[in-house]
Length: 105
Image (cartoon, rainbow, N blue to C red; front, top):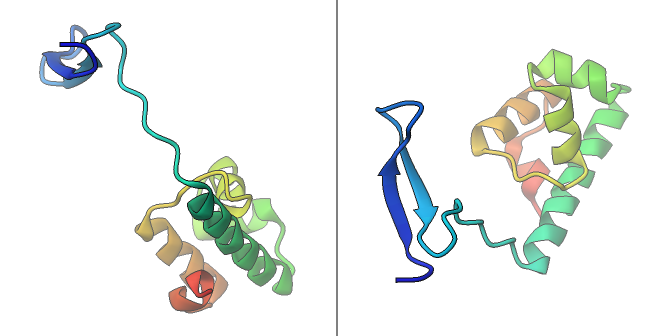
């Protein structure tokens, strides 16, 4: 049946399971978030950036201080990535800002 994912065993790692789209044999793509979610993600990134700049940190220095990959941190700050809650907690603790302040509208 087209469009229904097929669960198979990975040929490289027998303990891993893969999901493929039966229609074309490809891994199903995720649906992009709606525009209001992307806009909200960018506002959170702007808040994080403002808190970082207030403390005179560069992106690289802050990412190193927080123990986060620099490229990942930059994508979060630019609103291009959706961080895990754990990552937001690490960022808030490294900035010395309550988590609620980073995500509050």
